[in-house]
Amino acid sequence: MNFDYTPEQVELRKTVREFAQAEIAPQVMEWDEAQTFPLEVIRKIGELGYMGTIFPEELGGAGLGYIDYSIVIEELARVDPSVGLIVAAHTSLAANHIYSMGSEEQRRRYLPRLARGEWIGCWSLTEPEAGSDAAGTRSTALRQGDSWVLNGSKTFTTNAHHADVCVAMAVTDRGAAQHGISAFIIDKDTPGFRLGRKENKLGMRASATGEVIFENCRLAGSQLLGRQGEGFVDSLKVLDGGRISIAALAVGTAQGAYDEALKYSKQRKQFGRFISEFQAIQFKLADMAAGIEAARLLTYRAAWMKDRDQRVTKEAAIAKLFASEVAVRVAGEAVQILGGYGFIKDYRVEKFYRDVKLCTIGEGTSEIQRLVIARQLLK
Ligand SMILES: Cc1cc2nc3c(=O)[nH]c(=O)nc-3n(C[C@H](O)[C@H](O)[C@H](O)COP(=O)(O)OP(=O)(O)OC[C@H]3O[C@@H](n4cnc5c(N)ncnc54)[C@H](O)[C@@H]3O)c2cc1C
Image (tube, rainbow, N blue to C red):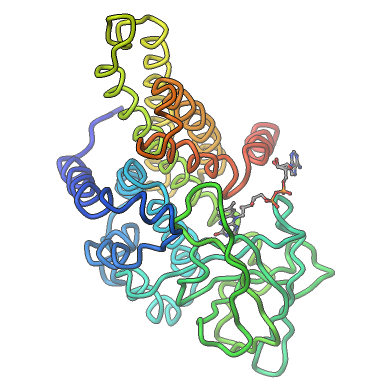
């Protein structure tokens, strides 16, 4: 076994960390308060190659793997989890669905601009009545001659209101259950495609989450993504990779909260001593650090396997479950260590505390991760 990052990965971490400090940190609270989507910064991340970290260079990507991708997401989340989420949904859901299941023509048409961040992608599986039970999709796609006609609506789509390209799942054969759902690529200016409500959220407020609506939205036959009827099964494979990025998002968020709490504990004095001298605070810091380290190892192990084309259904779900639950605890303890100041928006832990909860919900709740893991164990 080898736990070392390569020199290139060490350099990558340094580059993303410096970028996040310089370009993101000064604006984080402003974006959060106003729910501003940081388009300019996303374009810059694209110029650096990190909107397509995992895609080959000939398709506009950085030609790197999931370990590198996890480093990118972790370092962005350490400063602003919203930015990490925007990049993760774009990369491992929308763009990766096209990369993994798309035809050569679809890859060439969409990947280069997505990977360079010139286009933003969103991925729509969830519906108002089909959340954890995503196979309960109600949106439909009817074949009419050479075209597909989509009707229905999707909820909670990350990046929806800023996306140029949407990958969405719709029922093409109601009788075929899980094998009757297909994936489609929709360009934002397709007639019949429109955006609905944009959600007002607890956290991750700079990442737009919203509704996508199809009203007799007519697509050319060539917009079918992957095999007809296999869109749901393909989505589960896409989510295996996506969950590694949500685990990395959780690790980065936890690290950001822990860093603030550690620093504060060495500056704040009560009873004539720094609070870091109290064993109660030391034990909190120790538990936080232990949790983060374990979560990071699980995340990078899943990423390492994915880079070797191994199946990661169980490992990605374990990493996502563990990292997100740890991160929620770490952010809570960080607020506790800052006392009243942890509750105030001038200190960054307040925002980490709000943002982190999404990690136990998005791309499958913790309960669903347990179902996925148990299914693999009992197979
Ligand atoms: C900020 C944000 C961004 C998102 N981005 C996207 C996106 O880009 N694309 C997309 O498609 N979706 C996205 N989602 C949707 C997300 O994946 C769903 O919210 C999630 O899968 C849960 O679905 P639900 O909200 O309908 O909850 P429900 O499925 O209604 O679950 C409610 C509760 O019941 C539990 N539960 C449900 N079924 C079971 C079961 N069988 N056993 C035990 N417990 C169960 C759940 O764990 C949860 O605690 C996003 C959500 C949010 C909040």
